[in-house]
Image 1 (tube, rainbow, N blue to C red):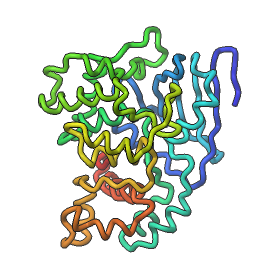
Image 2 (image 1 turned 45 degrees about the vertical axis):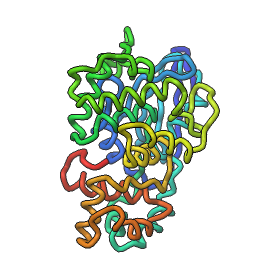
Image 3 (image 1 turned 30 degrees about the horizontal axis):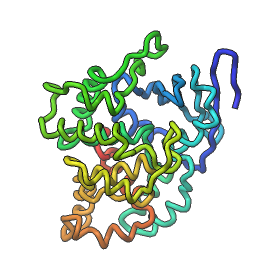
Length: 315
């Protein structure tokens, strides 16, 4: 790590090869919250707050070495050592693709997918709260439509960063309290979904559902909570179903065996391979064969669809 007088820190964080950088960037780019985060010229970037200090985080893959390079500008750069863990989680740097590939590659359905993309990762999330917000907004709409609505929410409830050096990341995502209180009428969502979204925001703001307090995730010193307990608390909220909980477990809580069984793309991908397996309860025995790496199996199936469509569909 190096720090310069201009309040910049640079981290080089290693990964186990292979690492499919283009596909993880494609995933993030298709779901980037307008104004908050952006993928441009092979770099993922967003404004960050860490223990009261703000800054900009930019991440790219090293052109030669097996590592990603994270540059932190601004006051947040003094927390560079602490930021190593969340950056590693977000970019799934601790994954061992050879171990995962050997396990999933033993399955005849997944073997060709693993062979085609051996370095596929499960993209993480900078904030579990943001991820749940996006998941609720994205119910029954396309990835593109969800991104548009999320951008409107940021404009209404977020905070603009004055004199920010990157216009595409010049907004802070709304806090739970701000999102719970803002008027979301005519935002482009059904009233029931708005109620679910703001009910979730209130639950997080009150501390009842501390989604960002899973071990090692919290950045403000809160005690970590049990993931099973958090899963149950999140699932108990109105408007949040098993898909959302498993999706958050995959990406934010780094559960390598999470499986969003009711995901339409996954259900279709399995049924296409065996027409007798249509519903999740029928598919369960088949998908259990992919334990303990079902999150990676889901990514391979989503990626197959995204590759075929040439778009960000899937996940």
